Image (cartoon, rainbow, N blue to C red; front, top):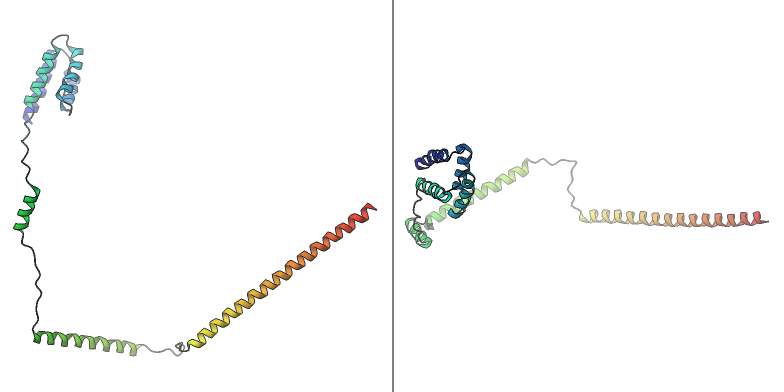
Amino acid sequence: MAAVLDFEPWLINKLKSLKTDENVFGTYISGILDSEDSVDDKKDALEGILAEIVESDISVHVNEIIEKWESSRPKEEAPKPVTDVDLQLAKLLESQSLATTTRREYTDEEKKIREAILSQYSQLSDNEENEVNEEEPESPDLVKNTNAADVAAAARGRREQARQEAQRKKEKDKEDREKQKQLKEEKKEKRKTQKGERKR
């Protein structure tokens, strides 16, 4: 970082020696050098700028600026050698001990104790259910529906009643349509009669 800081004062002095505005051109030249363009592109851009400032030895000044820039930049570290992923994975797996579960074998005595405890809990849960059922008071207003035939008959009765209602409505609609048709015919006949009388 200190090397980069050395470049900026050098560039300012260089631009002053070329009798130009170091603030404007200095930041512009630094921007070109900081870009990710190739060295040739940077040289072309610098030549374009310096052509406006200097009339001769443009390439000498450009090369001097580029060399100073590169010498002041920190050197990049050499890339680390790439290791084989499979090799790393194998080493990692070797270093870790895999957790294994072992199934425990119970002795006959332990099995009997276990069964006794489980049966005791199941009896407790059965007793609790019976107690809950006993605690629920039966309401005299509520009667269980034990006669499915009565329910089915009531449903059939409702369906039959609905069917009869629909039939009556259908017949009434038919009668209304016939009355409307008859009234239309009568009006039509009346008009014909009135037209005939007017013509006379």
